[in-house]
Image (cartoon, rainbow, N blue to C red; front, side):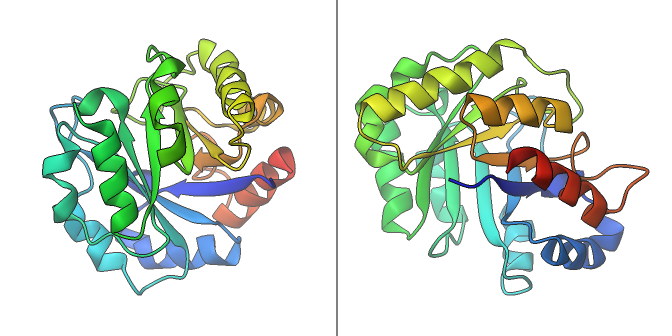
Length: 221
């Protein structure tokens, strides 16, 4: 699989959101990554359904919705999941992980499981047939700009090996957390496919979005 880029919406300049989306489209960015936080599962509150709905029909970039919420089975209906959306939930966030993944697929989305740095990859074994991607968090979720948890690099490799051994080489691995050029290169070597670009890799102070996207793209080819 070729490497792909997901732009972290919470790291964007909301005053210039339209211009930045135009720049992301010009740069060929594959996904808009929406971090939905409820202040419960993680100690922060961020983007909600209204933000996602407001951008529907305004761009051709695919939507990638990362639900950092407790009991996602009770909150999925808040979201107008559209055909082709990528939607991830955390393994620890629900007692009914398989049911949540099945509901995402019923709504037309690609279901994924998100793994925190300390979450064992064994949680994937019982839902292997229910997922289209795995999100490996390389920081503890909740805030942008955190330091990389180094063990996350080994975890990417372990997840890739687990998926391949189960005959699921088609399942993509997404990585999120301090995805700068140096780390992205290492993540790619370990088997990552989708790279969430935030303040470390895509929205940089001294580069345009197009420039930073080109650099990141060259790194993950």
